[in-house]
Length: 296
Image (cartoon, rainbow, N blue to C red; front, side, top):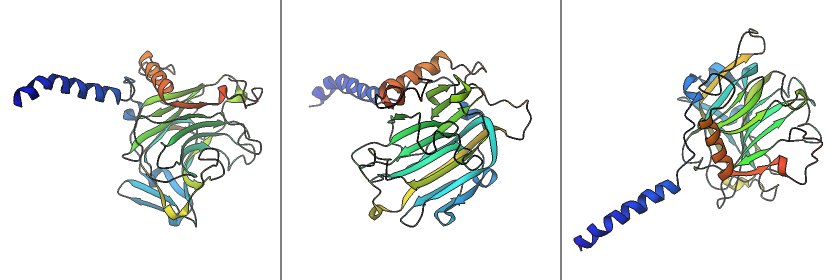
């Protein structure tokens, strides 16, 4: 028996290596912008915006939750005209259909009915399907009234309910870059002033009931027999130019070159993610009116 196991050992090792390889994440981006920015405590950078009874900060972790009475949201103390904005987030497992857990930039309170917005949103799901990470951009009221979204949606190469992962957006005068664990997953360039956010925005986070659209276009609704629905945030990172700050302020670099151009290694990692995990791109949706999204 021992001799048979000895003969099979190389095959078992090869099978193990193959299994690990098949389950691996994206190639290394070679540059980790989050490591260059110090974390900031919730109370140093944010305040509760709504649902204070559904929000708790404890030992560096902010917990917000949704139940049948309310959700919760928070807002940064300052508005920004550019910068790096991120947080480590852990999502709830199980049935979360209809629930949105988010981190986003917006000026909707300063410009109601005509606002800009940059979204990182986790669309709740049913237990047999993975979470969807939605990135979205609204420009000058395209998120008000008749919606004109610029959605790219992804599945993830890990289970976002098992541990904290870092999600971020870098907003510069020339582009938006979305990151997951420092891997760029989407680049949205400034092709014209009409399709790019140029006005100052605050950083927000929230958990709320979006049953009308969040999960499979509203097919599955929030079911409060599974309440509370919980989102956890920590490791907040903000390196931004405040709206009233120096005109000489510049956002952190996107790449090791110090420029706004992603390195070849970063581009390769982004292409891997988009090739393997991108599940929706608004530019290729035949139902969209492409005169409204000229950047495509």
